[in-house]
Image 1 (cartoon, rainbow, N blue to C red):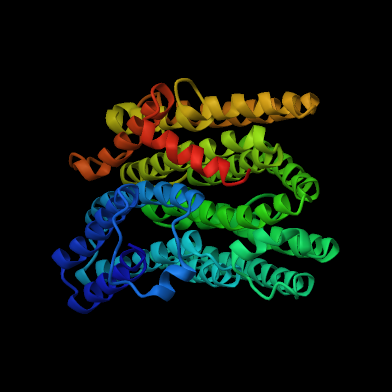
Image 2: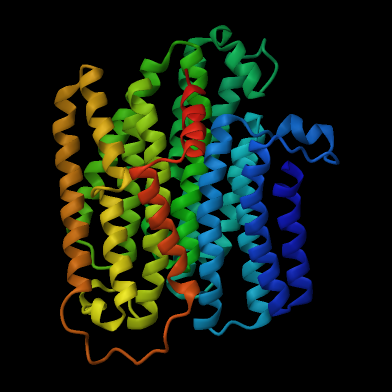
Length: 476
């Protein structure tokens, strides 16, 4: 299965680039998405890909936490792949441009898969860097001046972050010289033998390095520009999958601290950074003029919530992992729907969009319901995860921190809600051009994502609960 995940998309992407045929492009993109959907089911039924080399399973494995994050990435990737068919149509891309897009997005997905499946710390670092380079090409795909600026800003800031993470790995090698291995299983088994001083220093560097890629404050400057300038399906992948993959890398390092009984140090960093991210997103949410940047700052807020959940130990970890799933699907739905809005209004400015429900009722309701999902309105699962995190404050004896947490969440909810309702209601502007009826690929992916979210909150399928529970006990 690992060979399918890492090799097949690259082969299909290259074939698409060589053929430069629209049918081949679609087969490569949708075919890869279907293969990725099949992989978790095959893992659950213990179906093994027998022809893959043994060294591949040494460096790449589906453990419980990796399978959970891979499933989330797969759902987001499938929705982005289907929506890309609509993106091809409205931008009238040539077969060559489509082929380039398909190759770039498949390479991007492979790089994120490498981060998720890596069993070796240095190899994980390599794939994190690869995800930066492949996603930068997608951010610049439309070749506008603003997208070029966003891509360079993204590469510059994230490359510095990745360099700091590399310094952290070097420092860790100093503290664990006698272990002589960067495989996570060895680092976990002998975590208590690592020098505590060098372990703390290394975590500080890795925390800042991967935190830059995750997009938490104050190292978030690249995120609003990159997410707002990328094509809508790419924005969905950036927020719903890329941030998660970097977060998983940081979680794997956090497990070393848990095994070494030094997690009080790392939890403090998670908590401070999470609260700061909430504060920054709350402040900026009230003064934004671009609806895609609004979604980007919502990502910063939700990454902050995840950090807070991780800092609260076993009480908050389940909530954090549930929040990861809920945020990814909700945010993917919002970014894909923003592509419909951009199609109708030809602008990203909030003040120039109103009467969305009259312009296109399906897009208008998807926009509203997706917003309710991301801010945690019942019955969506973010309501549950936020409630569990507030409960975890009490269980950890930090009930006073629930007050600023709640206030920041309410401010973000007000900022997003007022903006979305302003855009959805009112009279449709006369300047809006007449468009043809949207194809199914423009709204079905969002509808499916929202249905999945409702099912998870109202009656979580046993398979989802099993994977989520397995991911949680990985850290215990």
